[in-house]
Each structure stands twice: as C-alpha cells, then as structure tokens.
Length: 153
Image (tube, rainbow, N blue to C red):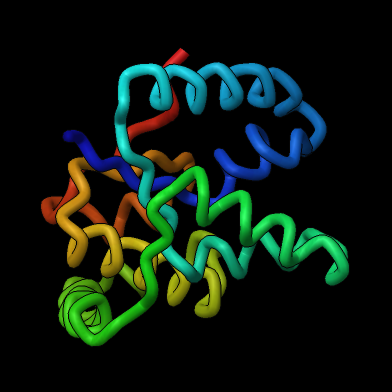
C-alpha cells in the first residue's frame, strides 16, 4: 500500500478550509485530493511536527478533537531517533552544500528550515513514497532524497 506524506498547507486547506488571499482555489482542490487518497486506499503520513504546526492555528479547546481526527484518519508519525538521525544527516549535508544559507538569503527563516528538515527526516525514516508540499524550502531539503510533489489538480 502506498504511503504519502503531507506538509501542513494541505491540511490547512483541506481540513481547516483556510487559505491565504489568492489561494482560495486550494481549498476544494485539497479536499478533493484527500478524498481521492482515501478512495484509493493510499495511506497518508502526518509527521507529529506537522500536527503541532496545524494545532498552532486551532483554539486549545479544540486540540483533542483535532488530534482524535488525525489519529483516526492518518498515520501520525512521532519524531523518533530514526527520524532524528536522518534529519541531522540531512541538515549537515544541506549546510555543507550551502543550501541553508541560500534559503535564508531567499527569505526563509532558520526555524522554518528546521521544521522542513524534521518533516523530510520523518518522511524518509518512515519510507514514505513522496511528500506533498508547496514549500520551496522543504523541496530543497528533500532534493535527491525523497520525491516532493505539488498537490495534483
């Protein structure tokens, strides 16, 4: 069975039904994509760090409900020692390749890059087939390690 990983944007669009101005068309697109994956029995991996990102936009009294929904609907992956090892190696490699410095110069923040790295590390350690993300920083970390795709139309 195929296993794909989601970045936070797809969840915000498809579950929370929120979009930034100019991204409103992503809401029905994400909802249809999540439905398609369910219908094709594709398992969706959500790294715990993505759950945390998502919950930051949810009132605390709704956290238990959201966590329960995620636990029932997705494979929620903790950030464990296997993911930590992959993420640490990946960070060191991208630092040596000047990728981190280039992304910071392009406007990404160090905390954003750390989260992207943790997501990629989790997906690789769980042997996900690909990551769905629209984030160029995440794509830079994943390059040549795991396929990153934009959400299909």
